[in-house]
Image (cartoon, rainbow, N blue to C red; front, side, top):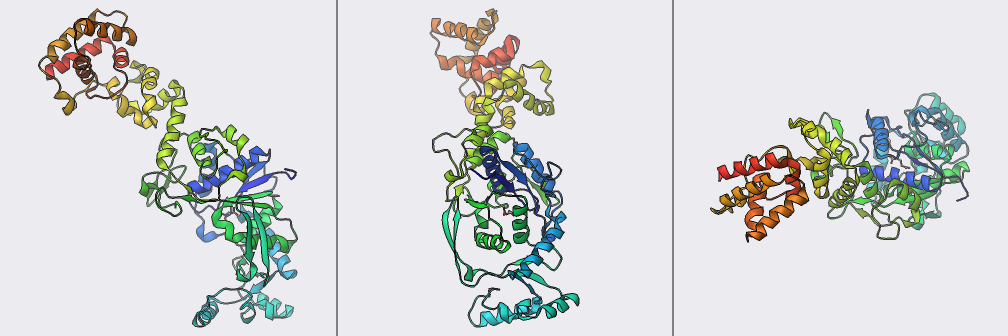
Length: 501
Ligand code: GLU
């Protein structure tokens, strides 16, 4: 790539970042890293009505948690700053004047009432109302006023907006890296508002001015922005600027059926759609972080939503992704969100963690249950159960019997405690008492020898043995449990079960 790669993530701080937005950020990050370029974050906060306090901080925190923080942003390498559009107001005002002066934009003074009336007139004629070349010269705009008249209207304090003057009849042949060649008819576009009466630019103007000034080389964003592409290319042309290259990412679809995965789907469908929890007065929307996902797992599953490296490989570190990412391999069609697969990804990252790390994460859960963690070999316990867990929060259910003796016994399994079981369990106690090297493998050998020698069926001993220790027929390899809880406790538990049945 000859041009220096500079890509941006440009969210509007209107609430928590949706997982789709996170994927957009990730793909920008990966593209930048792949090409030794820069990934920057710009806050597009020109719509004052939709501004939500806390959203900006949330966005930065989410990217940081995922390990994909921008190289440049607010308070960080502010070469092209400010990175908050609300702090760049004057820049946009000047550029909108430039478009007026060179004939690419015009003032529109229409009141809301006048616009309503114009809409009705069109609808009565059976037309859809589009504010564009078909009617713009019949409306209250600077297109039909002299320079002096326009200046006088503005001086009198008449409210106005600045609209783009879309070319009447042109076919735009554009290129999108993901979607290939795309065609647009300018005659069908509307004359979008670029600058509002409140002195603020709209998204379209601010976005193009900033992408130019911040030297954006590639615009990588969600498919919902594809319809804006012709307008954006025209604005670049109006300024005489070179447009960046565009890549519109496929939608993220609901797990079942069709349609975009929306912010509202999240907890309703039983999984989070936000990276971090988001608290408001109306309640809490859950987050991947608080649900026990590892950031590496979230990054990994998001990367595969609409992309793969051309092989069957599914597990990628961030570094591997950065090395193999290729926009040409991003799919055109929507990517179905699979919450079960996401858990599988988390499982893969969980089993890769050091036992000690997992033990540290498990500790607070145990303390909450009043377990004195110092008394147990947590690393060992974690190593025995992690193969079957997706989350650290699964651990307690899978391992409670290591910490507390069963009080109740699974009803169905208890029915198998026959009359002959009690004497067998008493013999088992005698066998266990004799064992001095109390390690899993040794205990297993000795107990099994005893069974073979005395022709005792496996199930007759193993099931009630497990029931005595665990309270149910679940858990890891039985002799591993025996080793961990130790001789004394094992025998106590068998005695207790004998009493109970
Ligand atoms: N502010 C827009 C958004 O919220 C940015 C779209 C773009 O990347 O151009 O998604």
